[in-house]
Amino acid sequence: MPLDRNRLKRYSIHERPSKVTPEDFAVECSPGKSFNEFLDGLPRFLQANQLRSLIDTVSEAVRNGKPILVLYGAHVVKTGLSPIFCQALSKGWITYAATNGAGTIHDLELARFGRTSEDVAEALEDGSFGMAIETGTEWNQAVNEGAEKGMGLGEAVGDWILSKGGPSTNQSILAAANDQGRPVTSHAAIGTDITHIHPESNGESIGSASYRDFELLCQRIPELNDGGVVINIGSAVILPEVFLKALSVARNLAGPVRNFTAANLDMNRHYRPSQNVLLRPTRSSGQALEVIGPHEILVPMLFQGVCEKLAQPKQ
Image (cartoon, rainbow, N blue to C red):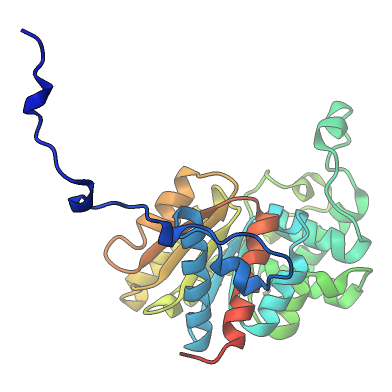
């Protein structure tokens, strides 16, 4: 028997809920637009909505005196975003931050020597990868001396940069954080960084300094409760894992750490940021936002949006 499609139960499109209407379309391009006009002219869908929501959320947190914690991988430094991070620290758009070991290495190389990021594939061929003597010597000396003084790893490298100076010290995230009294913790994984292979490297110093930073992060996490923001930018594994454990410690010792915004900015979607930064921490309260795209585009857009929003009268 042939299928009788005349029996299908149909309805009018005017009765059907629809997710797309022209009111949400992009605004046509025109010369001389301001950034706010550009941002408002983006379509009201998907990543554009997520970005606008994150800008609004960070701006509201700044106005309300709530902390913004940024977890950032080394790629953030390598893509030239240090000046924006330094400005954000000075303006209070970033309250405190956490990075991995590589984040401190690229920061030190740029600050002290005005250059960073070698050609790994080429240098690996002859075993010269990671063997720059100045980097290995100075980073380890900074950590060894800092550990003896009871510093965390991030503070130790930042203190070294401030004391020694260099061609790009004014664009060092770690130096800016130290100078302004805003902590940037660093969470090392032994064997993952080029500085660990040098003879000056001391596992005890690295471990003790990095562990101090973990404890410091645990102590600051409770401040996120009720309105804070945590943003992971470009760390696929280490910092999402560190944040999850620090959050558990904070909730265990300090009580509720809830109703905060967790955001992830990265070039690709990864499992650990999705689970350990976005979904698990906000399972019972708060909100999760994710914006996928290149750091060198998204981060300037985020903080330019915050800058513009905070320049407007509070509504």
